[in-house]
Image (tube, rainbow, N blue to C red; front, top):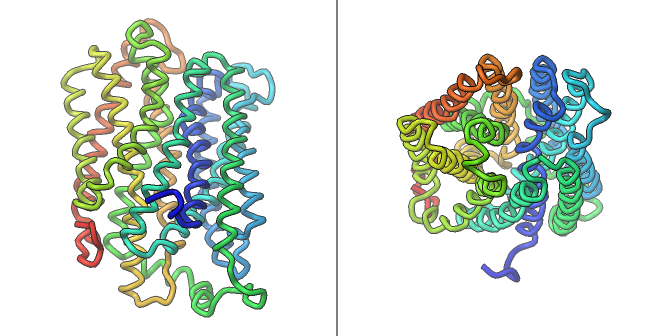
Length: 455
């Protein structure tokens, strides 16, 4: 596929992905260490902020569904999309500049974290739900979805380089002014990408004549249908709840490594064993390599289908965790490779999860003989169930680390903390891989015969 043959909707989807990937990967990777080790937030304030975020996500997901299902399509309008892009970029900048010179356990750090997390996640959810709907409804065929996934991964590949360059320039947050300057630059570049994507989206998202500014008859019927009734029809579907369970653990696993990777490496691997530049390359590889694997693995997807590819990734995670657990934490090079490989595998398989979501939407459309697909509702249900893992993972992991002296580190507690961290990075990966293999093995949409390239 040449650049000239790429459709406008593919350009729009990919440019928006470029902006969101730059912001979301940077945010999730750096905010944890910043608030825990630079701002010295109290443990209680940290837990409170994550619980508030969990509740906030539920409210924003539900409100996002009702807004996007309304007659005016206000969340998808061109002007509101531009405003949402601007707010998303501004929200991204909130955590990187302290509101004052913080003392240890200053109450204002907790407030800044709450505002930063809620503002960033609410604007990110808006963009993400619109993209899920765009993906399912503009690419009805499996082949077109694979092509869109490939184009999208190029954008994600470019966006994920923000981690690498920031690490090299700021020496992994050691030079805070450099880190803050990079954050501002990334926000500016992401905003340009958003606006470019919105411009392409304007060409095809709203092609109705002035007299047709309202929803079509089928859309009105869908919007007027009881949400509770629709959820009763969707939730009992076996494939959906199997996918929700698997995706919950995937989000937990992804959050676990994205948020705590720098903290684990700093405590488990000495500086003399791994220089700052090598660490930056290692962190960057955790975000760049998954996009490369998805791009290079398109032939595998067409030959074997996403079902076997995702299942293989779970098996590799479990095998790598078991081998590392047997080797022990003294092998620093092996540990660095293991952490990078696990992060790459988790990110890679997660990149493919739009494919089963889109197929579940199609299966529901055929099964219930609907006039309109429930792509938006399926996306919201998925978000409601799985996004809580984004808050639970930091709470559980920090609680475990604090029991072993992470917040009050001394030479006496260091060895205990290192043992705890090593156990977490191995046992959690092994446990999650086992649950996901058992769950994903029962997923059945992948056996449909009308989808080329699928198993």
